[in-house]
Length: 87
Image 1 (tube, rainbow, N blue to C red):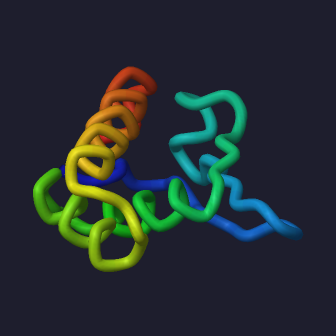
Image 2 (spheres, rainbow, N blue to C red):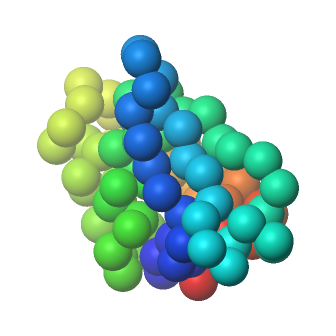
């Protein structure tokens, strides 16, 4: 799974935003605000990867237990799917 094309993650002040560019502008109205962890997950999903690999990366990067990491990644991916942001 991976994030659809034409979305850009940018750091603005102390937060991260995702904005549509190109063809995505007509399909997605608005922008997404992410915290540091959300931006980390987004960057992992910019490349084709698996949910399991995203959980592993989260465990390596942050001090979190596996159950919490898996639940958080599943929720994040679910929200991306609901917003039709995954290819």
